Image (cartoon, rainbow, N blue to C red; front, side):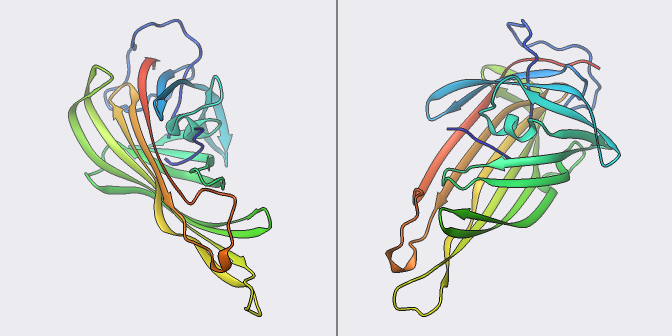
Amino acid sequence: MKFKILIAFTFITILASCSTESSTAASETNYLPLAIGDYWTYDVTTNAQTLKDSLYISNDTTINAKTYKKFKTKNLPMGFFSNSLNNNGLRKDGSSLLLTGSLALDFGVGVPINLNVTDFVVFNETAADNQQLGNITGTINQTLQTYPLVIDYTLKSIAIETLPTYTSNGHVYTDVKRVKTILNAKITTTVTVQGFPIPITATILDPQDVVVSNQYYAKNIGMVYTNTAINFSLNAIPGGITLPIPSTGSQTQEEYLVNYNVTH
């Protein structure tokens, strides 16, 4: 049930003893506070099983001569959001939050997609509804057993809407912005089919939005709720060849903020 990746964003805890949600002074236009020691704790529910992620800002880090806040998790993260930020750097540039690091996602087919991103825009507090924030495309070459895989992907983030109030896990938040992160992937391989003199290229996965994640950010708090859906459907391979991966998959994951502490 482990989720690893992208884009899209996120963080949590330095093992504090808060038993209820709490916060200290924060800026008026800050949807993700970025002070060392800030932390967020989430209940992560996948397939009726609930685990906990603790995300926190550990230190400043310099990447390409720019200063970022380094996010870490107390234990191996289970949630999409915490996975996206864990061991990566985030910095604010004007009204945008920029992510730099390595994102890894295994969307259920046993073929992890590892993405390197540089200043990928994960959030912009002044963006209009349905405005695209970040967009990257690329190709990854991997081998599954003896089969060479070519993975073409697009990762993008979109500012969806601003909500006056939003209720999650029994708590009402005010001034909330929703951002959607989408990973679209296509996978091809080369196979040798009896009766054909040369290997042929087969499309295992038609272009599909395999990961769609909605994150909700509350002013002066950070990410308060994430809903991530992972879906895929593979094609049959010519010649009756079967790969050691499931042909279809569907999974929904939810991350609920249960505890946090932010300062400035």
